[in-house]
Amino acid sequence: MNIETTKLELMHLLLQTQKESILKKLKSVFEEEQVDWWNEMSKKEQEEIKIGLSQADKGEYKANETVMKRFDKWH
Image (cartoon, rainbow, N blue to C red; front, side, top):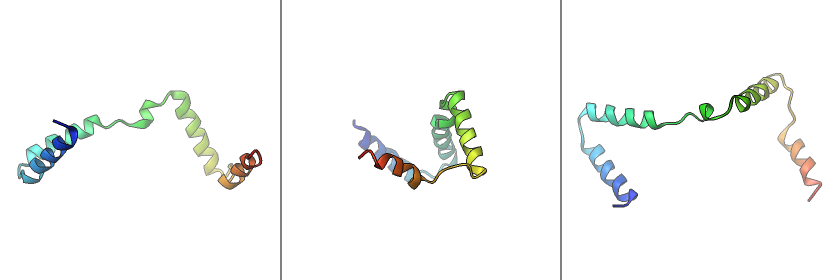
């Protein structure tokens, strides 16, 4: 059985059920499987992002257009 067929069958079952307990269980399965990309980063990457956000909050950044002009001169 391919994945698309399985999805369709599950959608059919989901739409047919009136049991809240089943819906709660399915929702919890999806929540458990959800990966938080932040937790997948290294501490160094997290710190660099925090620094960048702090700088942006203080207005310490260059507009994207300004940065891209720097790279356009090489083309």
